Amino acid sequence: MSQEWEDFSSGFAAVLGRPNVGKSALVNALVGTKVTIVSDKPNTTRTQVRGIITEDRCQVVLVDTPGIHRPRSPMGARLNETATEAASDVDLVLVVVDAASATGPGDKRVLDSTPAESFVVVNKIDRVSPAALLKRLEELAAWNKAAYFPVSARTGEGVAELRREIMALMPPGPAYYPAAMRADTTETEWIAELVREELLAIVRDELPHSIATAVTEVEERYVRCEIFVERDSQKAIVLGRHGENLKRVGTIVRQSLPKGYYLDLVVKVAKDWQSQARYLDQFGI
Ligand SMILES: Nc1nc2c(ncn2[C@@H]2O[C@H](COP(=O)(O)OP(=O)(O)OP(=O)(O)O)[C@@H](O)[C@H]2O)c(=O)[nH]1
Ligand SMILES: [Mg+2]
Image (cartoon, rainbow, N blue to C red; front, side, top):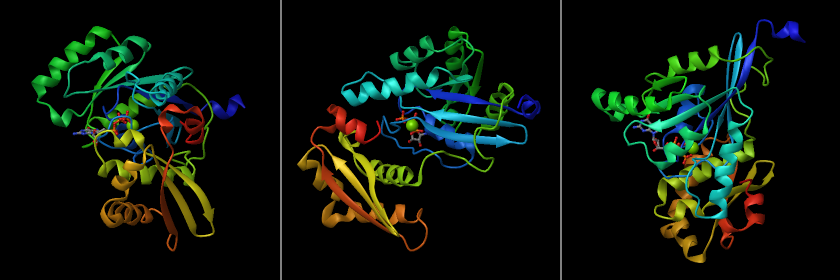
């Protein structure tokens, strides 16, 4: 076995940070394709999502995680646990912060609780002036982490260099996944995530937190995805006038399905699901 590894290195890198800093966008940029959903609403990511980078002599498994925040529900507490657990037993931790906002309590918590060997990724540099970025980097230097990378997941600036440095740090080891694989999400999980992503782009206020999605049936070319909300009053908002929201979501997500597939979207109420362990289990949170 060890002979096979002589020429190969591999490992895991967990991506941590407070909500909305662009962890998922960064994972997609590093992998070079969309493997995890992105939205402007906090707590978009709810599970550990793996994105895989494979080159000739190295494989890195990036672990996207939920944003670490002050929890206001049992769901929030689970999201924090999921993120914290991802950081144990990995070869590298990437702490992502937003270049355009000051170091808040959420950032501090993550910076304080991660190893000194971690990389700090200052994302969204497309939104700040060079002077503001410099100030931000000076402030973050107080944490004395191994390296600091100014990047923009949106424009791609700095991403190739970060990717190189991540790969350079991986210890000798085998490939964990086939070379062509970019994600380990199942097809049904991915459809449910795409439906949720499109809904998050439409809804506002507290509703994003109240939405969960799950594919409950795949029968030949029929796919049924259920959309759960917490209260009856939220059902109408998700449907939209004459069901237009659902139509829009269906049209967009169907483009990601193989030709000839039928996507059935059904809205249901799972009362106060964010506070109920059995629902959280059911939704894989
Ligand atoms: N301008 C700019 N926006 C970005 C960049 N990276 C991410 N965003 C935006 O920031 C928002 C949050 O991005 P996500 O990748 O979903 O953030 P996240 O950290 O994964 O958030 P959670 O999953 O909720 O913890 C989205 O609207 C992105 O389009 C960037 O480099 N520049
Ligand atoms: Mg995310």
